[in-house]
Image: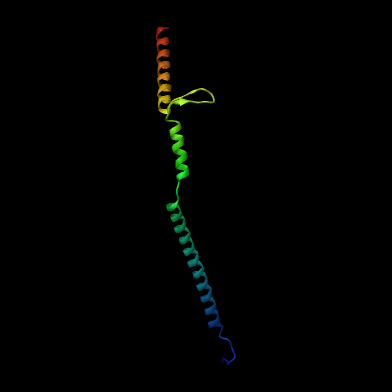
Length: 106
């Protein structure tokens, strides 16, 4: 027989377990929202970013390998990289043909 001063342990247990579950769900929800906000911030930051300094460096480098001139420090001639590649290929082809002609003649 229950007396008026007895504690209802079943109710205390159910409320305690329910409180723990609500706390866990709240923590997970806050963490989920936090990561959504961080991801949205990073996406917005990337969309708003400007690469003008890096683009200027790339443009300067591209111009430096695409022009004729002379290096003032060494006096070497400067030609565009495309022309240099063509000259190397022509030189390699002429050496290959010269080697073939020498091997045929012997």
